[in-house]
Amino acid sequence: MVIKLPSRYDRFNEMGKIKNLLKVGISAAVVSATATGIFYALRSDLYTVREIEVRGSIEPPPLSSQAVLSLAAVPTGKISLFRLDLQAIEKRLIASEWIDRVQVLVRPKDTLSIYVYYRQPRAMIQTKRGGLALVDVSGKVYGAASQMSSPDLPILGGFSEQSPEHIQQALKFLATWEASTLGALSLISSIDWDEERGFRTLVSYPIKNTKKNIGSDLPFFGRAMVDFGSDILTDLESRLSYLANVFQYLGQEGVSVRQIWADAGKKIVVKTSRGS
Image 1 (tube, rainbow, N blue to C red):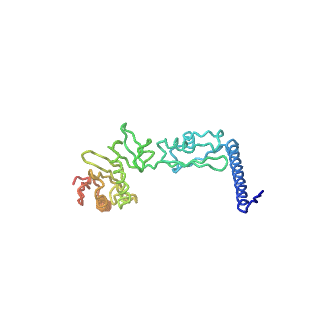
Image 2 (image 1 turned 90 degrees about the vertical axis):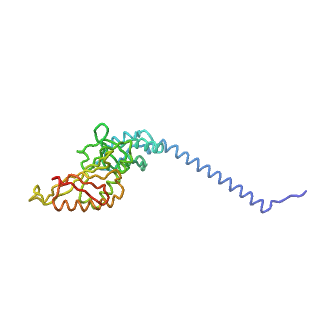
Image 3 (image 1 turned 180 degrees about the vertical axis):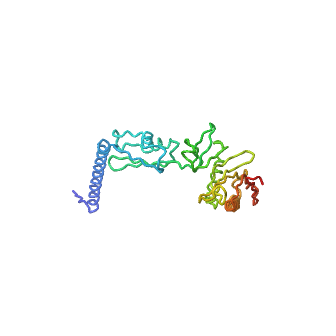
């Protein structure tokens, strides 16, 4: 009878099996403990949503905190932070025409934080019903506006919401104007689109040394209609540079004008208020 003693290799294999069994047991225990912890956390009052912080990118915001909470529709005091569907909350919030995007964060224990990025108004636009709506930097038309609530925003007239390319061109024109020397010399009150004449802008500019402001440090403002034609963005920077020289001269010499044509390349045609 031959008795085979276990070799060193066999003993090593047995020890490896024991270690693997221990690892499996420990892993199972950890998973079980984690699952138990999650189970109780989901049902613990410590993690029930009790407070919601609302902040916005604009002061004062176009929507009140209560309006934002209504849109978010989070059942305060009834649901755990771990059960919240943050994507669903964000989807409900950005359904509002006033909101561009949101950030929803879970804070320690019982607080939810909502940061609202509102649309940035760039201009106002005349609607089909004769009212005014806001236009953001992307050309999105939204909300309702008035000259009383937004006095510094230019008005876009004659534009159709079905022709967004004209709105985009007007916004790009406005940004280029304000970034140029003209931005410090004049102010655009309105930009109009006309099928025959193209783009037209109503511009206000300060006039010095006039009888209307003698003895006053405040300048008198003249208003002029400037025609740019259908291709408003073509060679725009050069045309604005020529216009800057024109407005600077008009302001310093106290000349009030009615009409300016800036749609003839380097040639700027000016019609004064006297009709000359």
